[in-house]
Image 1 (tube, each protein chain N blue to C red):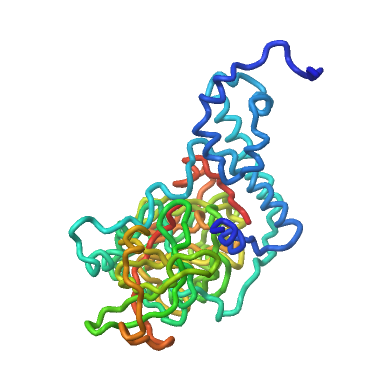
Image 2: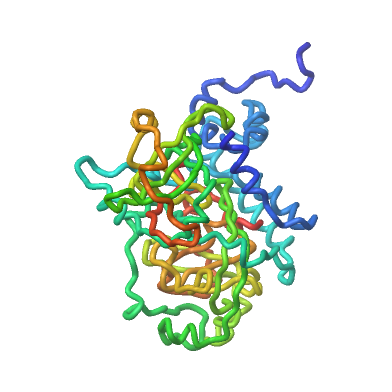
Length: 170
Length: 257
């Protein structure tokens, strides 16, 4: 499912016949890649080292300003090569302690059976058009309590927050 | 039925095991891998498949041939599609051969762009000097060899304008880049002179952020993402093939789209 999605996004937008032919040639060129594994020599989305606070590890990810409205409905991925979709972003809220949390529809199948959980934004990273949970495994997320609307106040879609980055995990 | 083309002596099947890492690396091209049998391998090399170097050099010969075909097909006046500014992904997607926490920001105040090779005026450049040259903006798709893409908005001086300004020999074959993150890269002169090849200093109208190549990176609309070095520190115009980081690891050099 993930692969189909990224294939759609990765569709080459240059439509002329000539350039189409170039694309074909490039496809063949890639077989001439002895020893080349993938673009990534080191994995992306590595979890923070044990004992490091989420805030500190997020600060190492060069947090970038992003509009809250641009985060809504994004896929949330697991930072592994298969980029499993863990859920989608439903809301961004601030809890009573001032922590910014990303509320995601977690789990389920084809949109059914998911439940909202709130993940600290410092445990997540931006990956292009998607987000990733870098500090928690899916197993840990399963034990997160379901989010109730009284647990946080939604941020305006025009609010700008800072979120760390990750490189692709494939 | 036995094929009439079957040779009397067939290659040792152990050869496939020998080349397994190479074949596994082709997983993105399932179609090609599907046709990648022992017989095909023997035909591809046309020589001694017992020697891994022979296989590798044959594959690299194909890649070099692809470079030539792509250079021949390249239309220096054909523009890649552009998109409305509303489609710009903010912030852009980060990628490098290392994860983001290992990015080493460059100090723009002390940064200088060094020039070498077939260039008349080799005075180093500051960011302010670069930004004083005529600027161009473009909203183009960044297409990665890994299969993903995003739409980004880039501004900066066209590389053609810069090369003309410093008196580069525009008949030279290559324009090569060195970067602060040890990611050497190079492109053909035709692409360097393409109107959609910029020395980008801004993204979505804002100064380029550290992880995306501040102060200067290359953005070309006609090549794959890995041909767009970030944190550029020097430019060389040369007729000697300069190669590049991924190219020396087997990626195709021209990498046109």
